Image 1 (cartoon, rainbow, N blue to C red):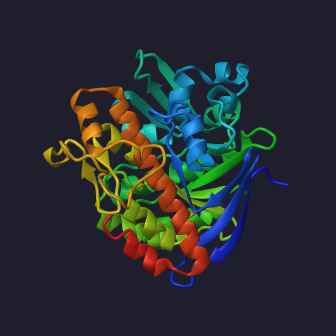
Image 2: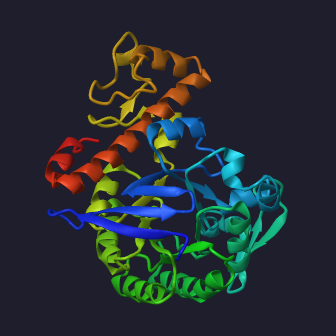
Length: 366
């Protein structure tokens, strides 16, 4: 039996939204689910106990960063990433493929793999499909992403096609390199071009991956270009496997993608926005530094209160940011990550109970 399986439990009568359950070696993940991003083995500012208290069952970490520090061999000697983080839930790791794009001024790329210069000390490292899968195996995670080439936006059709073809060339090499029981997800590329997405989905679906992802979105393209790609690509992925939209995290973008049949999401937005003094609420994003909160002893939004932070006033949180106290960033992070936990829980409920229109109305301003 595969180490990672997906069970479809319900389909929304109003959309193509799927309610499912992902089973991994570290337990069950109710889907649709959002993965808080713990790039370096930590969701910035909060601990495993915080994530558990908010009900998260799955987090994301990063192959590239952990391979440089503390090193995947060291993590393996210490008992794996779960033990190092003291995290009982599931972990999915990015392959390092995103850095192929984002660190383009620090790497060389060909069909063999990628040569990176470390952003830490300038030392050179080689990342191939085999090495990426090896690193993720050493980390001991539940789900490993295949190494792909993610084209930037904007790029020409020819550039998108070349990146897709290299992703296809690497796909069997990723699978051949996995350890016994190691679950690997395939990634569909193709930019904004439907024929390329169709070709990529067909190729990836023909290979025995445990899950499938839509890559190459949320890389700088406007929303009006992202939505058609997701709507077209998601139904192309195998129905019996989990579907993951990489790097997408605005609440409205999540709602749209869930409606297209996507199951998993990750994004740095909730934690990054928190560090920049911005909170997510049902009444839209709030700048905690705004002067109107200076003497406001209540919450920013009474409809967006969460147990980790509901005792603290808007005036206090503003003061913490003004005073550059680290507690301010932590409280904002707890608020935003709680907001996402509630969003996903309410999405699952709406699919089960057929109340999708009411859910969309509730989050219309988020």
